[in-house]
Length: 173
Image (cartoon, rainbow, N blue to C red; front, side, top):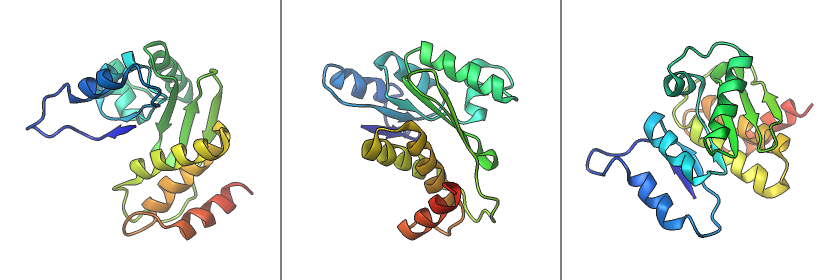
């Protein structure tokens, strides 16, 4: 189950928690890509993956997250709070994953013209989930996530399979 984005004002602000409470005893992997309170309040349900960005880490912990060590430190704090895997999007600097075993994985991005970043985070999450389900390999899942997020950023709309494949070939060497 992927839950992402903000909650409309017509919905209760604990809607994510209500959803997760209803499925907590089922064998459902949860992915959360949401902002401060929505994300933090989901951690007690032990989500398989969360995807904050650097700015969201700063907001959650009320500090300025600057360095790679800072990113890793606060990602591990989120794991202590319940997240299994923490995927941190870093915009033009790529992404970092702290996996459930405490391993750090990094992925850079291609230096191409960014056309539109809308949907890049969602594409990153979709790529990660698809890559992990296909291979059970966190390193590959991160590469596919980065390729999908980048392909969307380099496109007018959402990425297409051929764009993802092209970027994946380049980043895999």
